[in-house]
Image 1 (cartoon, one colour):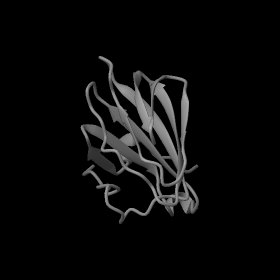
Image 2: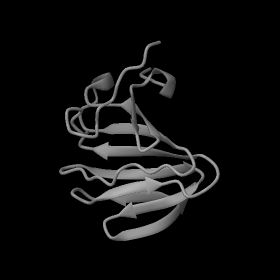
Image 3: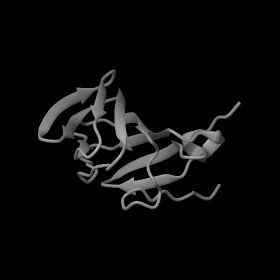
Image 4: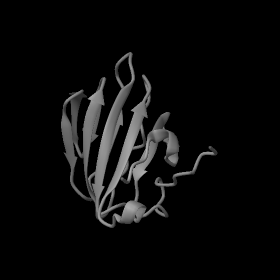
Length: 124
């Protein structure tokens, strides 16, 4: 069985948020998908960014926040999915008092050499 937890995953810190790369291109033989787990403490916001070729979904699993997709801004909460088309600026801000957590799936997987996608392996 191919499996990885956030404690075993490379991590990217940005905007006060921790993004754990659970599945990257080539992991377990995968070529068409990337999956991240993101923890967003209260008041944190990642930089507004976009992916040139990738479409992305964010599934909110905990908390409440504000999702920015293009010119739209909308409140999100646990149990919601947000779709982000390619070339669309987006970010999430934790506007609440508790942790916001979401799982993101991106296809095709992003290139780890692109700016803003630098994940570092943490020492075990």
